Length: 121
Image (cartoon, rainbow, N blue to C red):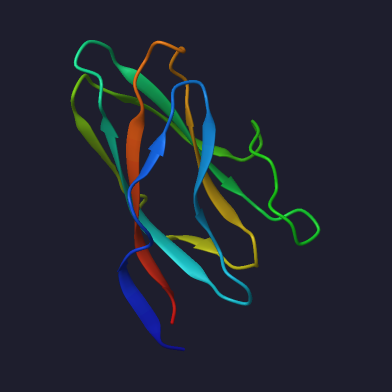
């Protein structure tokens, strides 16, 4: 199995008060999430983010909820947080997803997220 190393996509903006899939496993592939960078665009308020590892639901993308949450992170004003689990998070089935929820209110700013790791080439 050959692995493509590096970032697992482009920067994804997660708007205030929304949940966004920042990575979804392709058909018949496996991905290993090694780290995520979360950047708070606000210069005036802390943004809280929830990270969810969501298994597929009958082959389709599943839904993020309290049972899928693995972390809650407060990202300081105009700051970047580096989330790095001790072991990579394995996403092994088609449509398994990594979801970030931005808890900010409507007037808050977005969080920019990039996922780093390996995937089957």
